[in-house]
Image (cartoon, rainbow, N blue to C red):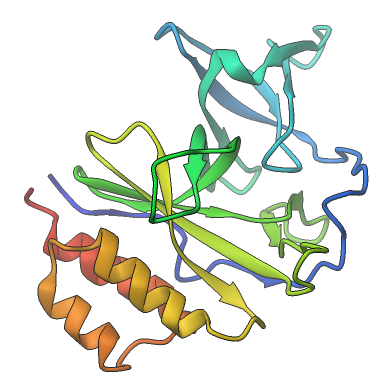
Length: 223
């Protein structure tokens, strides 16, 4: 299976000081795309991009002149959309796990697919997903949690047989993020022992998560 790398390396990270407690209006446009539902069916049309990971309903139109309808998130598996410039984005609605100590999840989120092969998929979760008026492309705004005061992006992994996405690492201004990366790599990327050693030795920092992901995907490409 040919290695499929999406837009991880060139992704735009923009600082946002929005609190999760605030109500954020979805000002994103409708883009051409396809909805995959939990029953396996698919529907093509115009999709209003989710503006936050926890959005409860997705606005959908069959064409420009049709009336929009609201799709419940629990009925959705994924959203595939294409920007006016022809760039593709994929969101998957998944339960997310933050702790390595247990398998419990406390929320389901629309995660943006960053890179994948036939064995594993990597995702990013941001505070907001916003379409830039200058570029007509998707921009991720950092997640800002009042609990710790540190804006950040969170990266997740889901392997082929998993039903949940597991937090691999975070990037931002928080202290200890390199240790978080080491722990995540050692726990979840066990198929690449050399990569684990290199991360443990400090060859990769939390600012180099894209490189870590790319290397792991290359190692597991034939699994």
